[in-house]
Length: 116
Length: 113
Image (tube, rainbow over all chains, first blue to last red; front, side, top):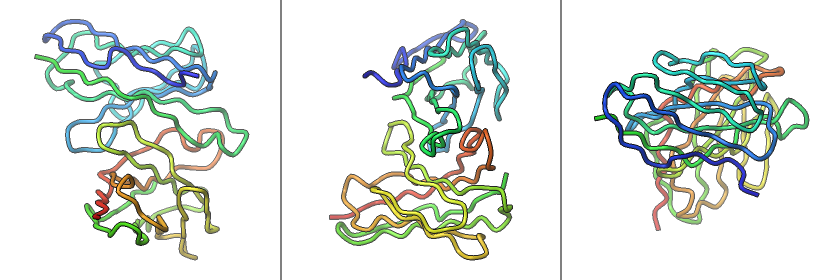
């Protein structure tokens, strides 16, 4: 049972390039999330999705695009990477409301992105 | 969502109880208190959540004051592996509870041998 995986784990790219970070979960969870974590700080929500084809902005969505055509996948695209997007990106998933354990988010291992 | 305040760092001796405080004085009646932790470089891990009654699971206990303006996460017998950043988060009840989480800076707990 792989759970939730992210790829790549490490990525170095240049300013202006398009980059896509992948997130895949095997639990068929309804919700999926993308967060970024800058060095020494807490996580900030970029985008989230309540179900396939339903996405919504989080706290810091500018410069990012998401899609969710399949329940298990939630890719995050940086259309034109900037140095300020250098960060660690975490994907997470969460079941629907029932049962009680559905309140919990399950996080992936993260992707460390460096934009030069 | 209500804002939370946590001390930036705490120390605890191995084998002793670790008591991590959180202030959420603006919490409303329909908001849960969640706790997550993040061990260095890993994704955060859910610990526990509660509304107004004390909660306990295999990882920790959550004590919420009667007025709900503060709470304490208790790790009863801290081990070195509990060294992590602990986040206290408030999230509304309902269908999306536990979804749009706002992680502050958290408390860095260091468990010392």
